[in-house]
Length: 77
Image 1: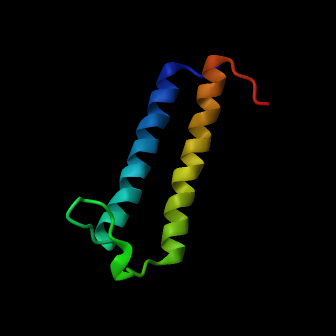
Image 2: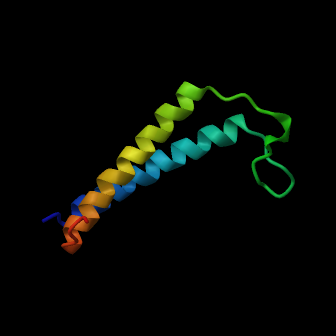
């Protein structure tokens, strides 16, 4: 069974990857006066870059989900 230190380590890694993903969006998409992404100016993003960043985030989320399920003794259905 996973110990709490493993879960904490993976949670920190998830947060780091998530922060990097949103930082990329912040740098490449303007925001409106309400601090919400403004797509009206049709920003062009590198699809490959978005995919790679999202894939890292999704992979880490799935890894973390498995650890949390194991730590709580939850069997996948």
